[in-house]
Length: 61
Image (cartoon, rainbow, N blue to C red; front, top):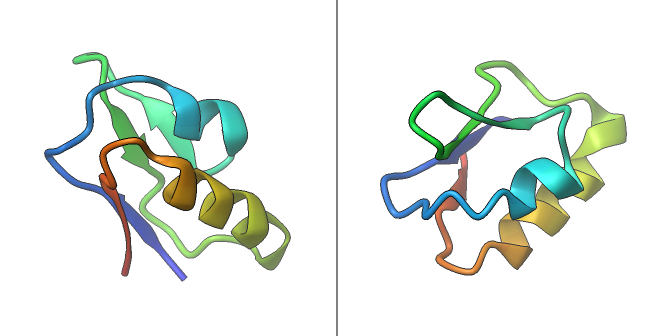
């Protein structure tokens, strides 16, 4: 499973705080997701981040 952060991101950093192995803050101050399949061990925390996003900017791909 892969994740994608869309243009709705407001840069709150919640996803990075919940799952730093998958989400990081870029130079523009908004989140991005790693461009690779997420390890099974990290799927739960990545889903928590996706479901906690205040603007629903995280998508599964």
